[in-house]
Length: 245
Image 1 (cartoon, rainbow, N blue to C red):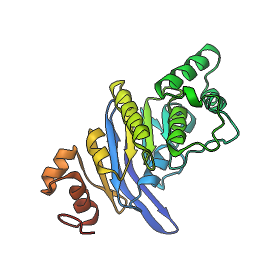
Image 2: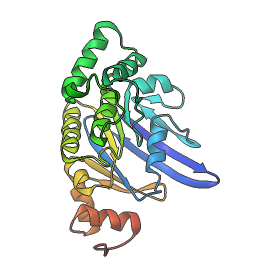
Image 3: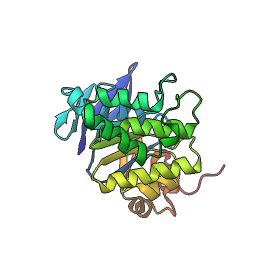
Image 4: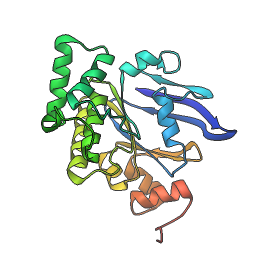
């Protein structure tokens, strides 16, 4: 389980996270929603140890992220807002490098590579350099990097942005499989249909804080809206009813 406890963060004197509290249980998919600038990416970066909170703490299975960053990173898989691929490496070389960095070697390393190659349908890409890959291909490799060491927790920042239909379907299938295996999953998204389909729980952020949380249908009921998009707009922007283009 991931526990976020009383997190505060400011940049250049402006507070971007304000007393942020929530948890991400094992075997559940949690969606983090918010307008641009609400603090979602900063929150995710603090959870993964890339940014330090000014106050508060994040715990991953009881380990304080700020105090035990290396141990925590062994338990996390992260798909960030940038793929971070190395264009001159083949997919096999790239994933082998990151698996080795996570402490895998020998038979365990080869098994991990073989498993992620099959699960994410990477066979046709395996010996290709990543330069020139499509957005969907880049996502698949980034997801493989996040999963190759079999983490217990997965963090994704807008993972379906720019994906074609087949790549998005593969990602959703993978997330559902991981949930069934007991992985704690937290992802941010602006695609409401995707959130409604995947999420066991939704967290809505505004002004650096969680303003509401619950199952998609619970948010719809509480706001009196007819769908999740309208509920999100009502909670995040304070606008009731439908958005007029």
